[in-house]
Image 1 (cartoon, helix red, strand yellow):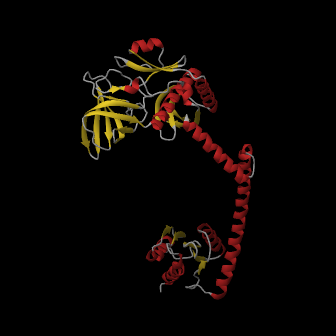
Image 2 (cartoon, helix red, strand yellow):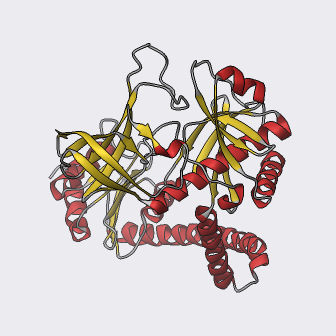
Image 3 (cartoon, one colour):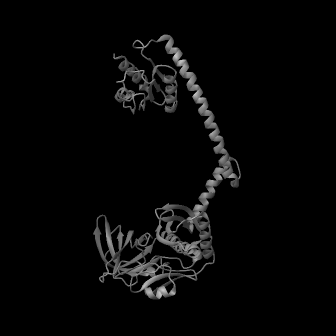
Length: 420
């Protein structure tokens, strides 16, 4: 059984221990110590990292094997268990010095202690219970059982949590049986027997927990709620605390400052500036769409006049085939132009863009024989050039990887239509 030093002192950065066993496990080594300050992944909190002698500690896991068959529970202080350290190198039996990656440890303690405070605040204010906790690399989250959570709930719980942080209350570790802890008023009861470990935040929260925690609430610095989303029958609340909250606030300020510079306004005027910009953008897009529609109408009539004056249908009473490669045109504009052409006259329009490699085929309904299908025709015309696309018998669109192939692709299509 591995003695867990972090159970009583989460601030121990360095410790001495003995290597009980060391076995190769793939590209890593599986190391068991007689005592450790390394926290294993458990209860939503990731494992510690650091070093054992010259070897890097890559992962730490809890290998519980209680011979009594009791349920595995990281809050227990008397289970027959071992903590497995996966290292980058082999360690010989005997004494070894372990060093905890402290920035990672203090970050995890800030997030986990802040979680206890936030969960307790929701219980105190609204009676909402936390069902699960996850400590992520960027943000952490709690899943809360509640009929509904509104912004006012978040604001109140965030404020109450920070009140407890700013009061710098003591955070104690207590041990006792489930009955003793229940009588002391723990927030969440447990079924497991034996000696349990609980985190006691003075006059605010007492919760069974096997994780690492701060010594005082003030060490959490600040908690900021970042996001709320519905997850089936639960509400997920994302938050940051400690140095993460500082980094988030600094990042938010930098983003706001950059936005204010782009909008040439004060920081407080950014929301109004964005709203104004959106209105102007919508108006400009509406105007541009109208102009594009007008341009397509005029260009369609010009193309019909040009082709009608110098071309004749491939078959008597057949449609005019208008094949045009435009220098610059988006796929959307080609589609719009094709729609204008087939609406004006009995036409088969074969259009392409030399700049973008876009291809659009369209026909006035009934212009081609019933057996003709422009979707199939387009695929047949552009596949030899590596193009892809499709559609139905009246309209099809696609693209060419090499826009320079557009004239040849349209010429081939004309040949296919004429049967030559």
